[in-house]
Image (cartoon, rainbow, N blue to C red):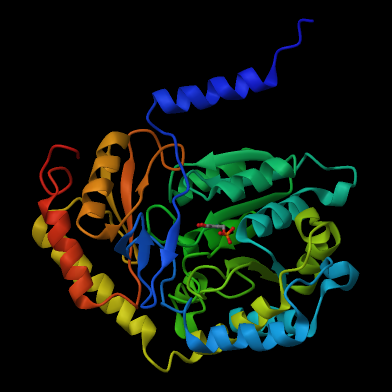
Length: 404
Ligand SMILES: Cc1ncc(COP(=O)(O)O)c(C=O)c1O
């Protein structure tokens, strides 16, 4: 039998990744009563999560979750289009649409599924003839799920250099006769910078392309009422017809949504397989997210302001230390290290000093661009930030020159 062995092939790929020093393993992080991380028996301050407003452990969210679970049970037991769509989901969808200024929002169980589903539905022509002729133009640093969504749709994927709106226009111009969608992260997940949204919106309008923004890291944090990077750029639903957001980051729960006009969102409900063929998220989670959304919109305790102060404190201190901070004004403040091994050893040294900052290595970031993806939260205290800066200043790599 000459059939190549799949098991041997995946083992060879794994062994290669090990030789490259790029193997990854999930580590068990428990949560201490005061919200810190407990890893291998040591308490660490988490500087790599996405709970930007510190809402994941907010008592209102936890109370809403348990109240709703007491009535609804834990699992929904069915997909949205069967019997899994509850009142909590419907109310959350309406509130998300209102928050983002769009006609309708459709819930997904995760952000990855939202991007896979929405792009598959919008680019894939609902399986009608024509599938495969759509063009999807994307920033080179977009989240993996946007890239995968275009591929799932069978669309032609053309990528442009990071944040280069003129190059994006050229990619659209390469196929002027094909239906097109341009997708970008609003805030780039590994770099923290904001996409040139106004320029991209203009070129999409001129070239009749649908503009799609994944605002996983902008929602809750940027713009009035935390309505995100699109709102902060002064753009509305006409200029950005499709807005995707996640609930597991600033909102502190889990799940995602895609918001847009009635026709586009209806297409998603009809054609997005990661929406149709999966169990609806627990209704209690939708209830907790509604509680979170109320807090995020009102921001009565000034969490966005606190986060902004924490970002400013970190950047000022990092600048004084000469650390290789990247040009980001958001909660994502990566330190570019370069070699994967350098990022790993910096991460280990920080852990020894009491901080959890995971090294981000290829293929998540380009070769030679490994980094410490430091993230800030409104829940961090000034003392914790100063202590992190102190530990960073002691690293032989980023603070000096060796690893940069
Ligand atoms: C830009 C972006 N989009 C989508 C996702 C996926 O979201 P989720 O974790 O809810 O699957 C992420 C997650 O990190 C992200 O950074």
